[in-house]
Amino acid sequence: MRVSLSIYFVLFLAVAGSALDAPKGPAVVTFKGLITQKNKADTAVLDAAMLDRLKTYTVKTVTPWYTGAQKFEGPSLQDVLKLVGATGKTLKIVALNDYAIEVPLEDAALYSPILARRINGVALTPRDKGPLFLVYPYDSKPELSTEKFYARSAWQIAVIEVL
Ligand SMILES: Nc1nc2c(c(=O)[nH]1)N[C@H]1C(S)=C(S)[C@@H](COP(=O)(O)O)O[C@H]1N2
Ligand SMILES: [Mo]
Image (cartoon, rainbow, N blue to C red; front, side, top):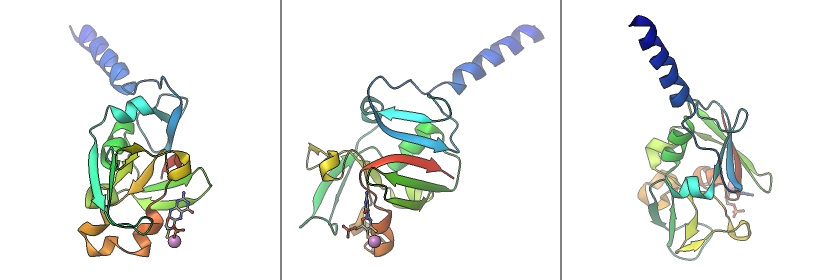
């Protein structure tokens, strides 16, 4: 009895440890560093389908980059961090244009930013800040409409390292 229970426990761990699907399409974003869910060597590669399976959130907000409020849609940063099992304190976000910025992990819970995939219903392409754009609800709290959070609002996100 003791032996068979141990076997089931080991099987459970094996399944739980490989819960992240392998990407079937091209990578949209790659997570590195302090993550527990991996699907390609030491990284978690997420494709469009994996991101689209998460709940979509809408953030309608004024930003420094567009005239008037715009509607952004995408998964919450919180849900994406949960998917990859992020355990660190800081996100080092690196964009396609090599822009890099460190964002405290706690921003995800404190401010509910999203990894925007669409603007006004249209997919964000690398030409216009896609495929992923970290958008905060700047209107919702005075501290968010500041240079500190604008700088954290990386667009064309390609790699996120959890530190
Ligand atoms: N990918 C990417 N995201 C970025 C930047 C950038 O150069 N590349 N600039 C950041 C900084 S420093 C700020 S303040 C805001 C606004 O940049 P902008 O004023 O050049 O539009 O976007 C942030 N996101
Ligand atoms: Mo900036």
